[in-house]
Length: 84
Image (cartoon, rainbow, N blue to C red; front, side, top):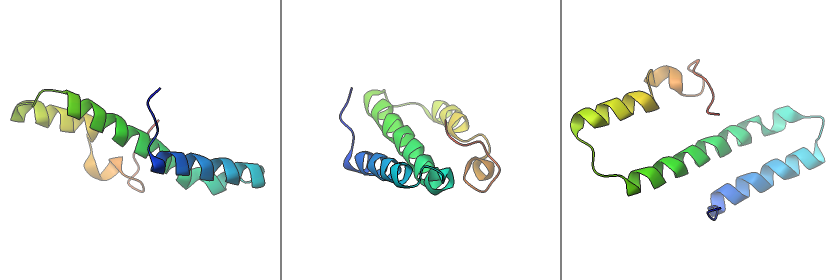
């Protein structure tokens, strides 16, 4: 397993502490869990991009469509699905 970034470790610790001290309040960790999932996705994308060949403009457009088919709806508050 690759080492986690300091930000990743900090978020995991924050979530664990909130769950430990407030086991009856899952709502307290929702934003932190979302942030952790988005951070993990960003780290994965960065790793893939750094190891991939440079794509053509057409390939970039297709990749962008995969990442955000409906830009406004894909972000929090826009009705899109959460990152799993």
